[in-house]
Length: 361
Image 1 (cartoon, rainbow, N blue to C red):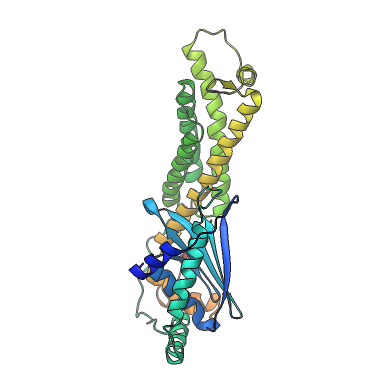
Image 2: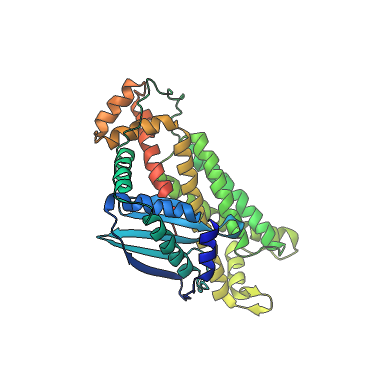
């Protein structure tokens, strides 16, 4: 931000918001039309140093970075028949925003209205033409040739399945060992397990070229269950091997655990606390694991197809060509195999997926 905007920001009177997810919203009127409103909103985002994450004809969204390069608020601006609605939502786990959302909204309104005044009728007409050219990809130059497909690997589901099972058993043993030694930290270790699973699945996806999300999602669920079920078994075996206990069954071990309950510092939460901790293990690992799986899959789908090929196919879709017509255009450029063409279409879908992930609050 320039000094004028920084000075104005310091004068804004904050309105505090208390909620599960604090937010603040305000509306203003504008004489701008639907064609130019979002480009001017985006210019305002740029002046404020906010990161654009999504745009369409009547909506634009940005996120603001605070300390440690971490996104702190998501700002959504929507246009409807001369009315501009600006909403800021906290992205942290806070229940009180200390007035930050109101500051973002009021700062945006000030910056937007100043930007709006920079455009007279002639400038608006020029901006309309520029927007139409961008939306229609009029400046895109069709290349004479495209980078050819790489040697394609046939998708093989058995690779992520075998790799996932081995990883789960190793994680189950590590979690069991740390639990028996008394250095297991609830929450932190579940996060670590999920991150390891996400990393391993990313490598397995690359190795196998297998990209069907539903199947990989089921595999992740299976890995989580194997990890925490095997964790109980490995704990049982470690305790038997390290102590001179009279032999007892795994079922008796589980019963004994429920009877002993979960002790946090000096507070015994009983079998309910133990059960809740197990449920939290599953939930934390699942939700973090799903995010890592989704981001890894999107990254791979974009990596395996050259950007110029994705742009070429998307250009023809913008020009209202059907899927079959786009396949014909790709074939003329050497992308003749159906599987190679499918990978191009998957890359286009992955771009949309990446956008949706960025939009998450």
